[in-house]
Image 1: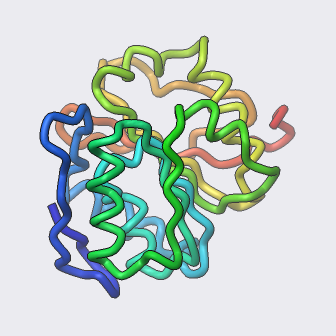
Image 2: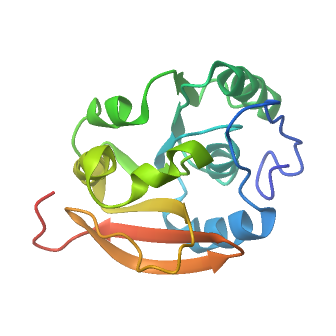
Length: 191
């Protein structure tokens, strides 16, 4: 796995052996970030379930101002720290070793322009409507800047994309078994 474009282009990323992370296919990552280019310059990014950091590092490489990476797995967080240093983004990056829900709930209103969620395989069942995922996405709507974007990668189970309080689905793409859903702030929503 490597950074596709920008200042860290072609930098090879380390993926922690035995971690539960699932790499985001290069083709899908490239298409996603090409579509996000209008909001990336100077964007404030939150990469939840960061794993190797491929998503947040791609955003930084393409001009984002800063990125907060949330990763609770110690092996993945160590690999992530090495990847940040290898890409030269130590000053622009922060790693939080916390549970995703707790981390997202702790940020202030309108703090991020782009919020990326790529849950690992063991957490995917919890990303159906209800429970902790719904509460996490409610906080994601609150911390999202007015013109910001939330991206959620889920496994394609041939069901409609999830709806979340305060967020509105604006785009959905399928890549193999994965579905990448883009959300914006809901107009008149309860964010």
